[in-house]
Length: 482
View 1: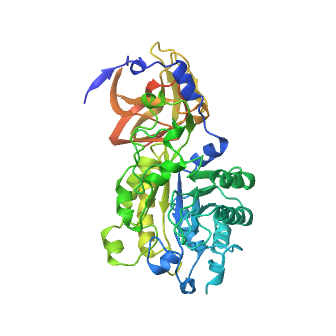
View 2 (view 1 turned 135 degrees about the horizontal axis):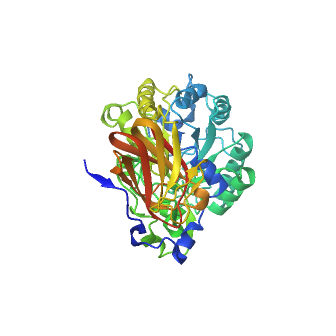
View 3 (view 1 turned 60 degrees about the vertical axis):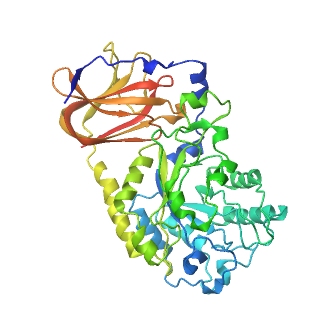
């Protein structure tokens, strides 16, 4: 074990801590709706519809909807199962690419009210979400393989009409989720989506809702396997994330599920370093979302390939959770109900194991602690709240315990109302006298950074040094766990 003395380097890795470029970067801050969204961290997708019955990922719009009759469907069961995993909300596929609608709509007969089931599933889920204190989100596929007007300007009217129904008839909605799917309609034409018009409808009826992926508020991580970047920036060039880029890197065929679980889009590994940002004038604040399904497919399937070949384990999902939620992104986990309309026992088993893996490390927070700023000149001040703005000459935070603790995990959060500033930090544990052990080096922090130590460290003092930052770093929260 290598021990070092106090007196760490504070040269900001030779980068300017303040200059014109830095001032430009830190002026980019989140909206209130983005701040509220980032507090959610983890929530769920529900893919359910006619594809569940036909055992497909993408329907073609010609399905016989009289087959749709999930007699045991129970949205309370969905919510109760997901609530105990720590989920904060559910986004439902109100309409997928096949055009079959799970809600009562006046603008097409291709909907759940004209099936033997005959109930508005979005309405049912809305009521269940209220019962279980979960937020409701809506996925309305822009691509519609059933609607005859697709590919014409008339389709934008059709889409806005359905979007308005969803905005007005189902209570509070926290998220409208749009992907980049844009295939041919029945007439062989592709649609030019009037995104600005769609956004204006949402802003009018739900000004606090985020518009995700093909939208201005939340960006796609770049793959459908939950893989995140080492440095996940929220301040990025506006040109790097737009509806055209999302469409180009999205699935273009039904059988691409495996590919999308493995690739990262050509937005590259570096979206927001200084080296990237200096080349762009238009910068935006856009937090990342990592979407992934508990199975290989987005819809539930009952065949050997999906059952035994590509089931994600609880350990797989927990890694995605710690990498995404613990790496300045949110996690959107898809849990598709089966043909009977229930979350299946195989998924419930995986979810229970997953829940234990992501909650157990946070059970023993160290409350008996005091926080002080740290500076090379030893000018320290006690921190009595969690708005930790490090002043000039202050380069970190010391966390002191009344007795030695076995530290296993640390979480950090920036106050993003001041933008995302921290570019690198190091963690040290006090050993004896003035000796310290370097136990971790991290990069970006953002909404949350989860520091999982390789092995527990016994100490009565942890020092967190910000070694590179855009202007003075501003931390909002530090938690330490045994």
